[in-house]
Amino acid sequence: MEKAELRKKYLKLRQSLSETEVDDLSIKIANKALQLPIWDKTYYHIFLAISEKKEVNTEFLLHILQGKDKSICIPKADFTTYEMQHILLQENTPIKVSEYGIPEPVEGITISPSKFDVVFVPLLAFDTFGNRVGYGKGFYDRFLAQCRPDCIKIGLSFFSAEEKILNENIDFPLNSSITPQKIYTF
Image 1: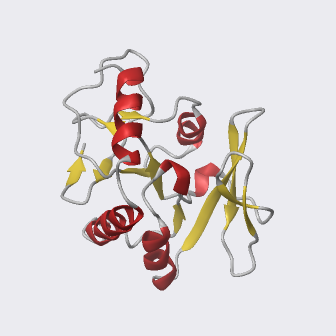
Image 2: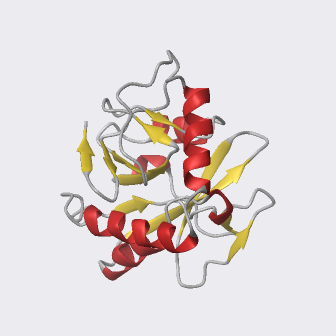
């Protein structure tokens, strides 16, 4: 399928999930993440879920990272430049839902993309080659292009991989994707 079709398909599939299903599947994804060899790293980037879009609830992964005393950053999107700032999450970091429904830090210490060891990436769909389909604005493509080549990029999805995404312009490829049932490695 092509990216536009995949976006429609997976937005519809996610909307069919109940809040309880979203949380149950998100917990399974967080538990699967514990199987990855990433926990000796220092700087982690994680998105905060847009609940209206029924994204993977990253709160459970966030608790794991905090429990392991990791340095965690969360993004703040600028819809005029389609760039993101990466703010260090601290106890006193104020979080506010933006006009786009995105929970974001109001302010804080900005961290350079070159610092990140691991990035958890939101997505709508991915294929067996590690290609992903996002919302189409390119925020994560621009961000991931600024990360170090050895940065580990991990997609989070409620659904299994598509065989192949049929577009020339694919989003920045992943190293792994975690679903409730399986870890895909590319």
